[in-house]
Image (tube, rainbow, N blue to C red):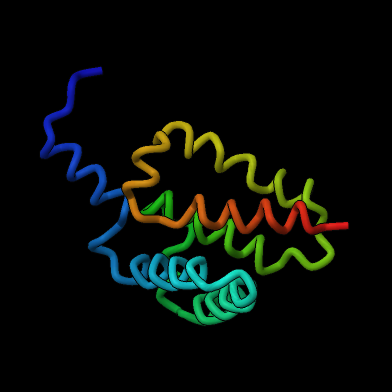
Length: 133
């Protein structure tokens, strides 16, 4: 493709971060906070974030509208983590599979720079998988 100017790159990151979209900002903030809780509190913090966001009418209205792909991935992974009771790791991994395509297309550095806690969520997921009997 064509080389991008830095202005365009900045715009792209703004779009990936969805930083002008208030409901998505709330999602990002809640999930980032939960992910940065200590190991012992993290699961409870994530459950709390999931519960809070699930009853947020604004959030319900934006999920699935394509306005924030990385937000969608983060929210979906968080929900999978919050609902893992009784789900096997394979089932959760399979549900996540479609998101890999998107993450690969966006590129790791862009995902990291977007500020979405996708890697932190995946880290929590891997800990769950390894802790499973």
